[in-house]
Image (cartoon, rainbow, N blue to C red; front, side):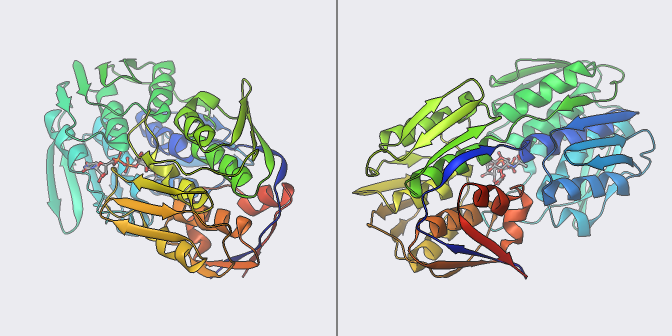
Length: 417
Ligand code: EPZ
């Protein structure tokens, strides 16, 4: 299994270009099922979750006409299957995003129920409740979700918990349903706003995306999708934190500063100097890091996907910070690994108490999930000495060419087979 080896203590300097967003492109790829024609996507990140989703669509019958650099051309007119097999779904939970489009286009779907993952049980009960609200018959047999419906009918769907992929799934299903659907307590993430915008460009009638009430008028069909994928806000913040923890100065370009506003606020509170341009952010470690408290929350609150990376930064701050994780039930596994590097972290239920330390020491550590991997790489960049991160296949799911981008910023980082 691949490992990443980092020789820490080098301040990162220079410019890094942000790739397309994994969490924006996955629903858009699933949405190609709603169309029948050549869908053209640009600024697609070459990460493993994207290739997995494309494999799944090909398994359903789609033709991959082109996948070079950041461009994908996928012909969805040839899709004929409505089953997503366990071996594909088990490697990527976001495969459940094909449920809504399959029900909308074919009136049936058989998708393996995604298992839990390291960070939590991550049920999709709210997705399934929404499909039932739209008139689908949903059963669970032998670990597979089996859905059938003559024609989805618009309805009012209330999400008791804010769910990002749940909102995306129902928005896609409702786009081709009969009549009006109202989604209440919807997710407001930029990826949801982007999905609505792209579906509307393909002929859907969706209003209110970005607020907690989204209204969809069903239409009879959608044109093929053509779009340039939104920049990845979580990748953006990860490189901002890399600058802070290595006492460097980094400019991220091709990003959307307003999508990381909550992180910018917290980093400025921690003494980091941040200057935003129209599509760039300059981050400079200008003062000793100060401890600040964070509490994760659905957008526009502090994203749970920044929690692990921010914890790394707090291990080097002067003072004590409280990090509360309110979205997932088990998203502190990086804490024990950071502890191996000398961090002082005590977990009390959903809160991690981080007492800052002057520096971290390199050590062998293990990645447990995507953002935990990023937090360990950040710690390795800041630490004195060598850090070896194992199970780095996690990082390859959501960060495009991370070692290459960090090396360009001056990091001493390499991958060993
Ligand atoms: C999306 O996951 C992201 N993934 C996650 O990013 C992100 O952490 C998460 O949203 C929260 O922002 C993609 O977009 C592909 P949720 P999702 O449904 O949609 C509970 C990363 O690192 N819930 O918003 O699966 C759930 O258990 C990944 O890029 C139900 O109870 O998350 C969780 O506690 C990790 N029932 C909370 O809601 C449901 O039916 C939020 O989950 C659905 C969700």
